[in-house]
Length: 168
Image (cartoon, rainbow, N blue to C red; front, side, top):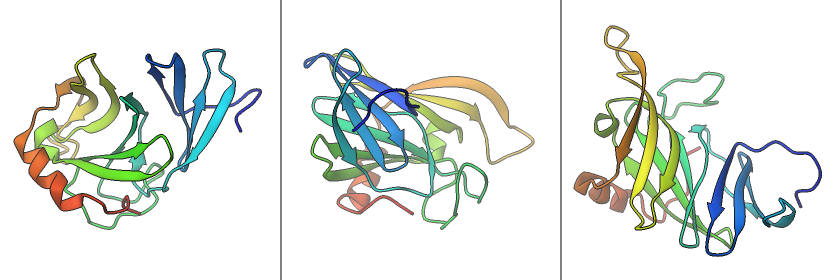
């Protein structure tokens, strides 16, 4: 259980229960009360993809990952299983059960790298993306862009990955 000083890779707020959901490392999410004391640790499947932040909405935990399409210090292995610069968001319930993967193709986010995820009160998902054209050194830039996810293609591709464990 989380206690004392610790490092988190992301934090989300559960407004309904006045508590925090934190990403502790590649395979652990923690629920903390409003004083940041540990309530529960949740094991998640580690992924070789580049993990970024954490989101929470209506009893589901959202763990965004980027497919950088190469082995590097942020991505330990490359399996060529997803389009370059695609975003894969692994969804878990509060018991640690893997629910599904939301897959967002790289072309839907201008081939940038997903960095953050959040939700408004109505459940609209917003993602923050670093850069554009990560896959093209001639076009690459480092703008920060935000996208609202209402993508019919994402729903179709999501169905292909439902009920499969995270990559890696």
